[in-house]
Length: 327
Length: 252
Figure 1 (cartoon, helix red, strand yellow):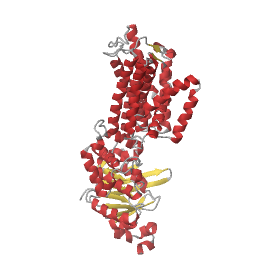
Figure 2 (spheres, rainbow over the protein chains, first blue to last red):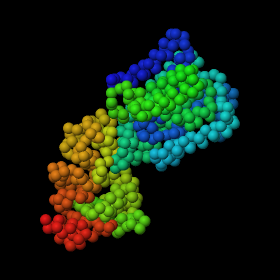
Figure 3 (cartoon, rainbow over the protein chains, first blue to last red):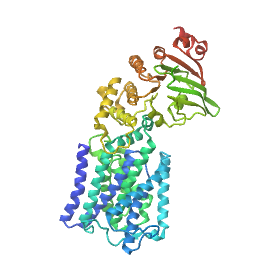
Figure 4 (cartoon, chains in turn yellow, brown):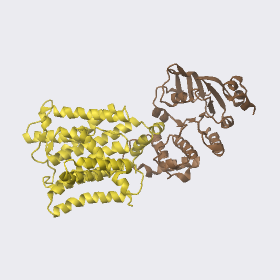
Protein backbone atom coordinates (compact mmCIF):
# COMPACT_ATOMS: atom_id res chain seq x y z
CA UNK A 1 0.00 0.00 0.00
CA UNK A 2 1.15 3.47 -0.82
CA UNK A 3 1.18 6.49 1.39
CA UNK A 4 -1.50 8.90 0.32
CA UNK A 5 1.00 11.66 -0.43
CA UNK A 6 2.95 9.34 -2.76
CA UNK A 7 -0.22 8.26 -4.51
CA UNK A 8 -1.14 11.91 -4.96
CA UNK A 9 2.24 12.55 -6.56
CA UNK A 10 1.74 9.63 -8.92
CA UNK A 11 -1.71 10.86 -9.95
CA UNK A 12 -0.48 14.36 -10.67
CA UNK A 13 2.54 13.04 -12.56
CA UNK A 14 0.35 10.73 -14.67
CA UNK A 15 -1.88 13.65 -15.55
CA UNK A 16 1.20 15.52 -16.74
CA UNK A 17 2.86 12.65 -18.59
CA UNK A 18 -0.13 11.35 -20.56
CA UNK A 19 -0.53 14.49 -22.69
CA UNK A 20 3.24 14.74 -23.16
CA UNK A 21 3.32 11.20 -24.52
CA UNK A 22 0.28 12.02 -26.64
CA UNK A 23 2.18 15.00 -27.99
CA UNK A 24 5.11 12.78 -28.93
CA UNK A 25 2.73 10.32 -30.60
CA UNK A 26 0.89 13.16 -32.30
CA UNK A 27 -2.47 12.40 -30.67
CA UNK A 28 -3.94 15.84 -30.01
CA UNK A 29 -7.31 14.40 -29.01
CA UNK A 30 -5.74 12.70 -25.98
CA UNK A 31 -4.29 16.06 -24.97
CA UNK A 32 -7.76 17.56 -25.15
CA UNK A 33 -9.11 14.74 -22.99
CA UNK A 34 -6.35 15.34 -20.43
CA UNK A 35 -7.18 19.05 -20.46
CA UNK A 36 -10.81 18.20 -19.83
CA UNK A 37 -9.81 15.99 -16.89
CA UNK A 38 -7.66 18.80 -15.49
CA UNK A 39 -10.45 21.36 -15.68
CA UNK A 40 -13.15 19.08 -14.32
CA UNK A 41 -10.79 18.03 -11.52
CA UNK A 42 -10.38 21.71 -10.68
CA UNK A 43 -14.15 22.07 -10.40
CA UNK A 44 -14.15 19.01 -8.14
CA UNK A 45 -11.36 20.39 -5.93
CA UNK A 46 -13.55 23.43 -5.43
CA UNK A 47 -16.65 21.45 -4.49
CA UNK A 48 -14.59 19.07 -2.34
CA UNK A 49 -13.61 21.94 -0.04
CA UNK A 50 -17.28 22.52 0.80
CA UNK A 51 -18.51 18.93 0.50
CA UNK A 52 -15.56 16.93 1.80
CA UNK A 53 -13.84 19.18 4.26
CA UNK A 54 -16.89 21.15 5.33
CA UNK A 55 -19.59 18.48 5.01
CA UNK A 56 -21.75 20.90 3.02
CA UNK A 57 -23.41 18.75 0.40
CA UNK A 58 -23.99 21.37 -2.25
CA UNK A 59 -26.08 20.20 -5.16
CA UNK A 60 -25.76 23.64 -6.70
CA UNK A 61 -22.14 23.97 -7.66
CA UNK A 62 -23.17 24.03 -11.30
CA UNK A 63 -24.22 27.61 -10.52
CA UNK A 64 -20.60 28.59 -10.11
CA UNK A 65 -19.35 26.39 -12.95
CA UNK A 66 -21.94 28.05 -15.17
CA UNK A 67 -21.23 31.55 -13.93
CA UNK A 68 -17.55 31.00 -14.67
CA UNK A 69 -18.50 29.76 -18.13
CA UNK A 70 -20.81 32.66 -18.84
CA UNK A 71 -18.27 35.17 -17.51
CA UNK A 72 -15.98 33.90 -20.22
CA UNK A 73 -18.75 33.69 -22.81
CA UNK A 74 -20.14 37.15 -22.22
CA UNK A 75 -16.79 38.93 -22.04
CA UNK A 76 -15.41 37.11 -25.06
CA UNK A 77 -18.55 37.55 -27.16
CA UNK A 78 -18.40 41.28 -26.60
CA UNK A 79 -14.72 41.32 -27.49
CA UNK A 80 -15.57 39.28 -30.59
CA UNK A 81 -18.25 41.71 -31.75
CA UNK A 82 -16.44 44.85 -30.55
CA UNK A 83 -19.50 46.02 -28.61
CA UNK A 84 -19.20 47.17 -25.01
CA UNK A 85 -21.18 45.37 -22.27
CA UNK A 86 -22.45 48.70 -21.10
CA UNK A 87 -21.67 52.35 -21.66
CA UNK A 88 -23.44 54.13 -18.81
CA UNK A 89 -22.72 54.96 -16.04
CA UNK A 90 -19.26 53.77 -16.98
CA UNK A 91 -17.87 51.86 -19.89
CA UNK A 92 -17.34 48.11 -19.59
CA UNK A 93 -15.89 46.39 -22.60
CA UNK A 94 -15.46 42.74 -23.43
CA UNK A 95 -12.08 41.11 -23.28
CA UNK A 96 -10.33 38.06 -24.62
CA UNK A 97 -7.59 38.04 -22.03
CA UNK A 98 -7.75 34.94 -19.85
CA UNK A 99 -6.34 36.47 -16.65
CA UNK A 100 -9.03 39.17 -16.71
CA UNK A 101 -11.74 36.62 -17.51
CA UNK A 102 -10.54 34.39 -14.67
CA UNK A 103 -10.68 37.21 -12.16
CA UNK A 104 -14.18 38.14 -13.29
CA UNK A 105 -15.25 34.48 -13.14
CA UNK A 106 -13.89 34.10 -9.60
CA UNK A 107 -15.39 37.35 -8.34
CA UNK A 108 -18.81 36.68 -9.88
CA UNK A 109 -18.88 33.13 -8.50
CA UNK A 110 -17.81 34.26 -5.04
CA UNK A 111 -20.49 36.94 -4.94
CA UNK A 112 -23.16 34.48 -6.05
CA UNK A 113 -21.93 32.00 -3.42
CA UNK A 114 -22.15 34.68 -0.76
CA UNK A 115 -25.79 35.23 -1.63
CA UNK A 116 -26.69 31.54 -2.05
CA UNK A 117 -24.69 30.65 1.06
CA UNK A 118 -26.29 33.30 3.26
CA UNK A 119 -29.70 31.87 2.43
CA UNK A 120 -28.94 28.16 2.22
CA UNK A 121 -26.55 27.80 5.17
CA UNK A 122 -29.45 28.47 7.52
CA UNK A 123 -30.49 24.95 6.70
CA UNK A 124 -28.59 21.70 6.91
CA UNK A 125 -28.76 18.10 5.74
CA UNK A 126 -31.35 17.28 3.12
CA UNK A 127 -32.71 20.83 3.18
CA UNK A 128 -29.33 22.26 2.32
CA UNK A 129 -29.09 19.87 -0.64
CA UNK A 130 -32.55 20.88 -1.80
CA UNK A 131 -32.04 24.62 -1.40
CA UNK A 132 -28.78 24.55 -3.35
CA UNK A 133 -30.43 22.41 -6.02
CA UNK A 134 -33.29 24.91 -6.26
CA UNK A 135 -30.88 27.80 -6.68
CA UNK A 136 -29.10 25.85 -9.38
CA UNK A 137 -32.32 25.34 -11.32
CA UNK A 138 -33.13 29.04 -11.00
CA UNK A 139 -29.85 29.93 -12.66
CA UNK A 140 -30.41 27.22 -15.29
CA UNK A 141 -33.80 28.53 -16.34
CA UNK A 142 -32.59 32.09 -16.20
CA UNK A 143 -29.79 31.25 -18.64
CA UNK A 144 -32.24 29.46 -20.95
CA UNK A 145 -34.64 32.38 -21.02
CA UNK A 146 -32.10 35.16 -21.50
CA UNK A 147 -31.94 35.64 -25.26
CA UNK A 148 -29.18 38.28 -25.23
CA UNK A 149 -26.57 35.59 -24.69
CA UNK A 150 -27.88 32.78 -26.80
CA UNK A 151 -30.66 31.51 -24.55
CA UNK A 152 -31.10 27.79 -24.94
CA UNK A 153 -28.59 27.62 -27.80
CA UNK A 154 -25.72 29.01 -25.80
CA UNK A 155 -22.85 31.12 -27.05
CA UNK A 156 -20.16 30.15 -29.49
CA UNK A 157 -16.77 31.82 -29.17
CA UNK A 158 -14.74 31.42 -32.35
CA UNK A 159 -11.25 31.91 -31.05
CA UNK A 160 -9.86 30.72 -27.76
CA UNK A 161 -9.03 33.55 -25.40
CA UNK A 162 -5.46 34.70 -25.04
CA UNK A 163 -2.90 34.31 -22.37
CA UNK A 164 0.20 36.54 -22.55
CA UNK A 165 3.15 34.63 -23.98
CA UNK A 166 1.22 31.51 -24.99
CA UNK A 167 -0.61 30.33 -28.05
CA UNK A 168 -3.65 28.89 -26.34
CA UNK A 169 -4.94 27.28 -29.51
CA UNK A 170 -2.07 24.80 -29.39
CA UNK A 171 -3.55 21.95 -27.31
CA UNK A 172 -0.43 21.21 -25.27
CA UNK A 173 0.03 24.87 -24.36
CA UNK A 174 -3.55 25.22 -23.22
CA UNK A 175 -3.17 21.98 -21.27
CA UNK A 176 -0.03 23.31 -19.58
CA UNK A 177 -1.86 26.44 -18.57
CA UNK A 178 -4.76 24.51 -17.06
CA UNK A 179 -2.38 22.13 -15.33
CA UNK A 180 -0.49 25.05 -13.79
CA UNK A 181 -3.74 26.54 -12.54
CA UNK A 182 -4.73 23.19 -11.03
CA UNK A 183 -1.36 22.87 -9.26
CA UNK A 184 -1.63 26.40 -7.88
CA UNK A 185 -5.13 25.71 -6.57
CA UNK A 186 -4.05 22.37 -5.06
CA UNK A 187 -1.24 24.16 -3.25
CA UNK A 188 -3.63 26.82 -2.00
CA UNK A 189 -6.23 24.31 -0.79
CA UNK A 190 -3.66 22.07 0.90
CA UNK A 191 -2.41 25.12 2.83
CA UNK A 192 -5.97 25.99 3.67
CA UNK A 193 -6.74 22.49 4.95
CA UNK A 194 -3.81 22.60 7.35
CA UNK A 195 -4.54 26.10 8.61
CA UNK A 196 -6.55 27.17 11.61
CA UNK A 197 -9.42 27.75 9.19
CA UNK A 198 -9.19 24.19 7.87
CA UNK A 199 -9.23 22.78 11.39
CA UNK A 200 -12.24 24.93 12.29
CA UNK A 201 -14.03 23.87 9.10
CA UNK A 202 -13.56 20.15 9.75
CA UNK A 203 -14.32 20.71 13.42
CA UNK A 204 -17.62 22.31 12.43
CA UNK A 205 -18.26 19.32 10.15
CA UNK A 206 -17.36 16.54 12.60
CA UNK A 207 -18.95 18.09 15.66
CA UNK A 208 -20.70 21.44 15.22
CA UNK A 209 -21.66 21.57 18.90
CA UNK A 210 -18.05 21.25 19.93
CA UNK A 211 -16.86 23.91 17.51
CA UNK A 212 -19.45 26.36 18.79
CA UNK A 213 -18.64 25.61 22.41
CA UNK A 214 -15.03 26.64 21.88
CA UNK A 215 -16.19 29.96 20.47
CA UNK A 216 -16.26 29.31 16.73
CA UNK A 217 -18.97 30.94 14.65
CA UNK A 218 -19.62 27.90 12.50
CA UNK A 219 -22.02 29.60 10.11
CA UNK A 220 -19.39 32.15 9.18
CA UNK A 221 -16.72 29.51 8.78
CA UNK A 222 -19.02 27.53 6.48
CA UNK A 223 -19.97 30.61 4.50
CA UNK A 224 -16.33 31.52 3.87
CA UNK A 225 -15.57 27.92 2.85
CA UNK A 226 -18.57 27.90 0.52
CA UNK A 227 -17.45 31.15 -1.11
CA UNK A 228 -13.86 29.97 -1.64
CA UNK A 229 -15.15 26.66 -2.95
CA UNK A 230 -17.41 28.49 -5.41
CA UNK A 231 -14.55 30.70 -6.60
CA UNK A 232 -12.49 27.64 -7.53
CA UNK A 233 -15.39 25.95 -9.33
CA UNK A 234 -16.11 29.24 -11.12
CA UNK A 235 -12.53 29.42 -12.35
CA UNK A 236 -12.90 25.87 -13.65
CA UNK A 237 -16.09 26.93 -15.46
CA UNK A 238 -14.23 29.71 -17.29
CA UNK A 239 -11.52 27.28 -18.39
CA UNK A 240 -14.08 24.67 -19.43
CA UNK A 241 -15.84 27.24 -21.62
CA UNK A 242 -12.52 28.11 -23.16
CA UNK A 243 -11.73 24.47 -23.81
CA UNK A 244 -14.99 24.02 -25.74
CA UNK A 245 -15.14 27.60 -27.02
CA UNK A 246 -18.80 27.26 -26.22
CA UNK A 247 -21.07 27.95 -23.27
CA UNK A 248 -24.63 26.77 -22.84
CA UNK A 249 -27.19 26.58 -20.04
CA UNK A 250 -26.22 22.91 -19.61
CA UNK A 251 -23.32 24.16 -17.51
CA UNK A 252 -25.90 25.33 -14.96
CA UNK A 253 -27.99 22.16 -14.96
CA UNK A 254 -28.21 19.84 -12.00
CA UNK A 255 -26.56 17.13 -14.10
CA UNK A 256 -23.42 19.21 -13.97
CA UNK A 257 -23.66 19.52 -10.18
CA UNK A 258 -24.13 15.77 -9.96
CA UNK A 259 -21.21 15.13 -12.29
CA UNK A 260 -18.83 17.20 -10.17
CA UNK A 261 -20.09 15.33 -7.13
CA UNK A 262 -19.42 12.00 -8.87
CA UNK A 263 -15.76 12.96 -9.40
CA UNK A 264 -15.44 13.47 -5.67
CA UNK A 265 -17.19 10.26 -4.70
CA UNK A 266 -15.20 8.20 -7.21
CA UNK A 267 -11.90 9.70 -6.14
CA UNK A 268 -12.52 9.91 -2.41
CA UNK A 269 -14.48 12.42 -0.39
CA UNK A 270 -12.37 15.02 1.46
CA UNK A 271 -9.19 13.80 -0.23
CA UNK A 272 -7.44 16.67 -1.91
CA UNK A 273 -6.45 14.68 -5.02
CA UNK A 274 -9.66 12.65 -5.09
CA UNK A 275 -11.37 14.78 -7.76
CA UNK A 276 -8.39 14.34 -10.11
CA UNK A 277 -8.61 10.57 -9.91
CA UNK A 278 -12.39 10.75 -10.10
CA UNK A 279 -12.49 13.05 -13.12
CA UNK A 280 -9.88 10.93 -14.89
CA UNK A 281 -11.86 7.73 -14.39
CA UNK A 282 -15.06 9.47 -15.46
CA UNK A 283 -13.58 10.84 -18.67
CA UNK A 284 -11.87 7.56 -19.53
CA UNK A 285 -15.14 5.69 -19.01
CA UNK A 286 -17.09 8.27 -20.96
CA UNK A 287 -14.67 8.06 -23.85
CA UNK A 288 -14.03 4.34 -24.08
CA UNK A 289 -17.26 2.89 -22.76
CA UNK A 290 -19.09 5.63 -24.64
CA UNK A 291 -17.62 4.31 -27.88
CA UNK A 292 -18.76 0.84 -26.97
CA UNK A 293 -22.27 1.68 -25.82
CA UNK A 294 -24.51 4.69 -25.80
CA UNK A 295 -25.70 3.62 -22.39
CA UNK A 296 -22.27 3.74 -20.79
CA UNK A 297 -23.67 5.51 -17.75
CA UNK A 298 -25.24 2.23 -16.66
CA UNK A 299 -21.69 0.98 -16.07
CA UNK A 300 -20.77 4.23 -14.38
CA UNK A 301 -23.76 3.71 -12.12
CA UNK A 302 -22.57 0.22 -11.21
CA UNK A 303 -19.09 1.48 -10.42
CA UNK A 304 -20.48 4.30 -8.34
CA UNK A 305 -22.68 1.87 -6.46
CA UNK A 306 -19.67 -0.32 -5.75
CA UNK A 307 -17.63 2.61 -4.47
CA UNK A 308 -20.40 3.88 -2.22
CA UNK A 309 -21.12 0.43 -0.81
CA UNK A 310 -17.66 -1.04 -0.46
CA UNK A 311 -14.97 1.60 -0.91
CA UNK A 312 -16.04 4.82 0.69
CA UNK A 313 -12.57 6.30 0.56
CA UNK A 314 -12.93 6.16 -3.23
CA UNK A 315 -9.93 5.41 -5.42
CA UNK A 316 -7.51 7.28 -3.21
CA UNK A 317 -8.84 5.60 -0.10
CA UNK A 318 -8.70 2.18 -1.72
CA UNK A 319 -5.16 2.52 -3.02
CA UNK A 320 -3.45 4.21 -0.11
CA UNK A 321 -2.77 3.53 3.53
CA UNK A 322 -5.30 4.98 5.89
CA UNK A 323 -4.34 8.51 6.73
CA UNK A 324 -6.54 11.09 8.38
CA UNK A 325 -9.01 12.24 5.78
CA UNK A 326 -8.67 15.81 6.89
CA UNK A 327 -4.89 15.95 6.57
CA UNK B 1 -20.06 41.83 48.83
CA UNK B 2 -18.49 40.10 45.86
CA UNK B 3 -20.41 39.97 42.63
CA UNK B 4 -21.42 36.60 41.21
CA UNK B 5 -19.62 35.52 38.03
CA UNK B 6 -22.76 33.94 36.70
CA UNK B 7 -26.18 35.00 37.72
CA UNK B 8 -29.46 33.42 36.61
CA UNK B 9 -32.45 35.58 37.46
CA UNK B 10 -36.04 34.36 37.45
CA UNK B 11 -35.69 32.28 34.30
CA UNK B 12 -38.81 30.78 32.80
CA UNK B 13 -38.98 28.33 29.94
CA UNK B 14 -42.01 26.32 28.95
CA UNK B 15 -42.45 23.64 26.30
CA UNK B 16 -46.18 23.62 25.75
CA UNK B 17 -47.73 22.96 29.13
CA UNK B 18 -44.47 21.68 30.60
CA UNK B 19 -42.65 24.29 32.68
CA UNK B 20 -39.06 23.15 32.38
CA UNK B 21 -37.80 26.30 34.08
CA UNK B 22 -40.26 27.87 36.45
CA UNK B 23 -38.66 30.98 37.87
CA UNK B 24 -35.13 29.73 38.47
CA UNK B 25 -32.61 32.02 40.17
CA UNK B 26 -29.07 30.87 40.79
CA UNK B 27 -25.66 32.47 41.44
CA UNK B 28 -22.16 31.20 40.85
CA UNK B 29 -19.71 33.04 43.11
CA UNK B 30 -15.96 33.33 42.51
CA UNK B 31 -13.99 30.39 43.82
CA UNK B 32 -16.90 28.09 44.51
CA UNK B 33 -18.23 24.85 43.20
CA UNK B 34 -21.96 25.17 43.02
CA UNK B 35 -23.61 21.83 42.43
CA UNK B 36 -26.97 21.54 40.76
CA UNK B 37 -28.79 18.32 41.55
CA UNK B 38 -32.25 17.09 40.84
CA UNK B 39 -34.08 13.99 39.65
CA UNK B 40 -34.32 13.14 35.97
CA UNK B 41 -36.67 15.45 34.14
CA UNK B 42 -36.20 18.23 36.70
CA UNK B 43 -35.10 20.62 33.96
CA UNK B 44 -31.33 20.58 34.46
CA UNK B 45 -30.50 20.26 30.78
CA UNK B 46 -32.95 23.00 29.87
CA UNK B 47 -31.33 25.30 32.40
CA UNK B 48 -27.85 24.50 31.11
CA UNK B 49 -28.88 25.28 27.55
CA UNK B 50 -30.19 28.64 28.68
CA UNK B 51 -26.92 29.40 30.40
CA UNK B 52 -24.61 28.11 27.66
CA UNK B 53 -26.77 29.20 24.75
CA UNK B 54 -29.00 27.28 22.40
CA UNK B 55 -32.22 28.02 24.26
CA UNK B 56 -33.52 31.51 25.01
CA UNK B 57 -35.53 31.95 28.20
CA UNK B 58 -39.18 32.94 27.77
CA UNK B 59 -38.66 35.33 30.65
CA UNK B 60 -35.81 36.23 32.98
CA UNK B 61 -32.11 36.90 32.37
CA UNK B 62 -28.71 35.30 32.53
CA UNK B 63 -25.79 37.58 33.44
CA UNK B 64 -22.15 36.67 33.06
CA UNK B 65 -19.64 38.94 34.77
CA UNK B 66 -22.33 41.55 35.08
CA UNK B 67 -23.23 41.48 31.41
CA UNK B 68 -26.51 40.13 30.11
CA UNK B 69 -25.94 37.15 27.83
CA UNK B 70 -29.47 35.78 27.51
CA UNK B 71 -29.62 36.61 23.81
CA UNK B 72 -26.05 35.69 22.87
CA UNK B 73 -25.17 32.70 20.70
CA UNK B 74 -23.27 29.68 21.98
CA UNK B 75 -20.01 30.81 20.43
CA UNK B 76 -20.34 34.36 21.76
CA UNK B 77 -20.78 33.04 25.29
CA UNK B 78 -17.81 30.74 24.83
CA UNK B 79 -15.70 33.68 23.71
CA UNK B 80 -16.71 35.56 26.86
CA UNK B 81 -15.18 32.77 28.90
CA UNK B 82 -17.84 30.22 29.63
CA UNK B 83 -16.15 26.81 29.46
CA UNK B 84 -18.48 23.90 29.02
CA UNK B 85 -18.20 20.14 29.19
CA UNK B 86 -20.96 17.85 27.99
CA UNK B 87 -22.83 14.98 29.53
CA UNK B 88 -22.26 12.93 26.41
CA UNK B 89 -18.79 13.76 25.13
CA UNK B 90 -19.01 16.24 22.28
CA UNK B 91 -15.67 15.85 20.57
CA UNK B 92 -14.63 15.60 16.96
CA UNK B 93 -14.11 11.83 16.93
CA UNK B 94 -12.16 11.83 13.66
CA UNK B 95 -9.63 14.27 15.11
CA UNK B 96 -6.63 13.29 17.16
CA UNK B 97 -6.68 14.24 20.82
CA UNK B 98 -4.25 17.06 20.09
CA UNK B 99 -6.37 18.37 17.23
CA UNK B 100 -9.40 18.60 19.49
CA UNK B 101 -7.42 20.66 21.96
CA UNK B 102 -5.92 22.88 19.25
CA UNK B 103 -9.44 23.44 17.88
CA UNK B 104 -10.26 24.85 21.30
CA UNK B 105 -7.26 27.16 21.12
CA UNK B 106 -8.24 28.33 17.64
CA UNK B 107 -11.67 29.25 18.97
CA UNK B 108 -10.26 30.88 22.09
CA UNK B 109 -7.74 33.02 20.26
CA UNK B 110 -10.23 34.00 17.55
CA UNK B 111 -7.74 32.98 14.87
CA UNK B 112 -10.31 31.07 12.83
CA UNK B 113 -9.73 33.09 9.68
CA UNK B 114 -6.05 32.32 9.28
CA UNK B 115 -5.73 30.56 5.98
CA UNK B 116 -2.08 29.80 5.44
CA UNK B 117 -0.12 29.11 8.60
CA UNK B 118 -0.15 25.36 9.40
CA UNK B 119 -1.96 25.31 12.69
CA UNK B 120 -0.72 21.93 13.90
CA UNK B 121 2.86 23.17 13.69
CA UNK B 122 2.34 26.42 15.54
CA UNK B 123 4.61 26.21 18.61
CA UNK B 124 2.50 28.59 20.68
CA UNK B 125 -0.59 26.42 20.19
CA UNK B 126 1.25 23.16 20.68
CA UNK B 127 2.81 24.27 23.93
CA UNK B 128 -0.52 25.35 25.38
CA UNK B 129 -2.26 22.23 24.06
CA UNK B 130 0.31 19.88 25.58
CA UNK B 131 0.10 21.77 28.84
CA UNK B 132 -3.68 21.32 28.95
CA UNK B 133 -3.34 17.61 28.13
CA UNK B 134 -0.77 17.18 30.86
CA UNK B 135 -3.06 18.75 33.42
CA UNK B 136 -5.76 16.17 32.75
CA UNK B 137 -3.27 13.32 32.39
CA UNK B 138 -3.61 12.70 28.66
CA UNK B 139 -0.09 13.77 27.69
CA UNK B 140 0.73 10.31 26.30
CA UNK B 141 -2.30 10.26 24.03
CA UNK B 142 -1.80 13.46 22.03
CA UNK B 143 -1.61 11.61 18.70
CA UNK B 144 -4.35 9.08 19.49
CA UNK B 145 -7.54 9.26 17.45
CA UNK B 146 -10.27 10.55 19.72
CA UNK B 147 -12.57 7.71 18.66
CA UNK B 148 -10.04 5.26 20.15
CA UNK B 149 -10.11 6.82 23.61
CA UNK B 150 -11.90 5.10 26.46
CA UNK B 151 -14.99 6.70 27.88
CA UNK B 152 -13.06 8.06 30.84
CA UNK B 153 -10.31 9.48 28.65
CA UNK B 154 -12.90 11.30 26.57
CA UNK B 155 -14.17 12.94 29.73
CA UNK B 156 -10.63 14.02 30.52
CA UNK B 157 -10.27 15.42 27.03
CA UNK B 158 -13.50 17.36 27.43
CA UNK B 159 -11.99 19.03 30.45
CA UNK B 160 -8.71 19.68 28.62
CA UNK B 161 -10.56 21.39 25.78
CA UNK B 162 -12.52 23.49 28.28
CA UNK B 163 -9.22 24.45 29.93
CA UNK B 164 -7.84 25.85 26.68
CA UNK B 165 -10.54 28.49 26.75
CA UNK B 166 -9.07 29.84 29.98
CA UNK B 167 -12.64 30.17 31.15
CA UNK B 168 -13.90 32.54 33.78
CA UNK B 169 -16.47 29.95 34.76
CA UNK B 170 -16.98 26.26 34.04
CA UNK B 171 -20.28 24.67 33.27
CA UNK B 172 -19.92 20.93 33.69
CA UNK B 173 -22.69 18.54 32.84
CA UNK B 174 -22.17 15.24 34.68
CA UNK B 175 -18.41 15.04 34.27
CA UNK B 176 -18.31 11.91 36.46
CA UNK B 177 -20.84 9.95 34.42
CA UNK B 178 -19.50 6.52 33.59
CA UNK B 179 -16.09 7.14 35.11
CA UNK B 180 -15.95 4.39 37.72
CA UNK B 181 -14.80 4.84 41.30
CA UNK B 182 -11.12 5.36 40.53
CA UNK B 183 -11.75 7.85 37.75
CA UNK B 184 -14.26 9.93 39.65
CA UNK B 185 -11.91 10.11 42.61
CA UNK B 186 -9.13 11.47 40.41
CA UNK B 187 -11.48 13.95 38.74
CA UNK B 188 -12.83 15.04 42.12
CA UNK B 189 -9.32 15.98 43.20
CA UNK B 190 -8.72 17.79 39.95
CA UNK B 191 -11.92 19.81 40.14
CA UNK B 192 -11.13 20.84 43.69
CA UNK B 193 -7.88 22.34 42.37
CA UNK B 194 -9.58 23.86 39.38
CA UNK B 195 -12.14 25.91 41.30
CA UNK B 196 -9.38 28.27 42.45
CA UNK B 197 -8.95 29.24 38.78
CA UNK B 198 -12.59 29.56 37.90
CA UNK B 199 -15.79 28.65 39.70
CA UNK B 200 -17.68 25.59 38.53
CA UNK B 201 -21.38 25.07 38.10
CA UNK B 202 -21.52 21.34 38.42
CA UNK B 203 -24.46 19.22 37.37
CA UNK B 204 -23.82 15.78 38.74
CA UNK B 205 -25.60 12.59 39.70
CA UNK B 206 -22.75 11.15 41.70
CA UNK B 207 -23.78 12.19 45.21
CA UNK B 208 -20.47 11.20 46.80
CA UNK B 209 -18.68 13.56 44.44
CA UNK B 210 -21.22 16.32 44.99
CA UNK B 211 -21.01 16.09 48.76
CA UNK B 212 -17.22 15.93 48.63
CA UNK B 213 -16.82 18.87 46.28
CA UNK B 214 -19.64 21.33 46.50
CA UNK B 215 -19.45 24.55 48.46
CA UNK B 216 -23.13 25.06 47.80
CA UNK B 217 -25.84 22.85 46.39
CA UNK B 218 -29.06 23.83 44.65
CA UNK B 219 -31.81 21.29 44.25
CA UNK B 220 -33.96 21.52 41.16
CA UNK B 221 -37.33 19.75 41.08
CA UNK B 222 -39.96 20.24 38.38
CA UNK B 223 -38.33 23.42 37.12
CA UNK B 224 -38.06 25.05 40.54
CA UNK B 225 -35.14 25.40 42.90
CA UNK B 226 -36.56 24.03 46.13
CA UNK B 227 -33.45 24.64 48.23
CA UNK B 228 -29.99 26.17 48.06
CA UNK B 229 -27.44 25.77 50.80
CA UNK B 230 -24.30 24.12 52.13
CA UNK B 231 -23.86 20.36 52.01
CA UNK B 232 -25.00 20.03 55.62
CA UNK B 233 -28.05 22.20 55.04
CA UNK B 234 -29.10 20.25 51.99
CA UNK B 235 -28.62 16.92 53.73
CA UNK B 236 -30.79 18.11 56.56
CA UNK B 237 -33.51 19.72 54.45
CA UNK B 238 -36.71 17.64 54.78
CA UNK B 239 -38.13 18.86 51.46
CA UNK B 240 -35.01 17.74 49.62
CA UNK B 241 -35.12 14.38 51.36
CA UNK B 242 -38.66 13.86 50.31
CA UNK B 243 -38.19 15.03 46.74
CA UNK B 244 -34.92 13.57 45.82
CA UNK B 245 -32.46 12.05 48.20
CA UNK B 246 -34.71 9.57 49.93
CA UNK B 247 -34.36 9.14 53.68
CA UNK B 248 -32.34 5.97 53.58
CA UNK B 249 -29.58 7.44 51.47
CA UNK B 250 -29.10 10.40 53.77
CA UNK B 251 -29.00 8.30 56.90
CA UNK B 252 -26.57 5.85 55.40
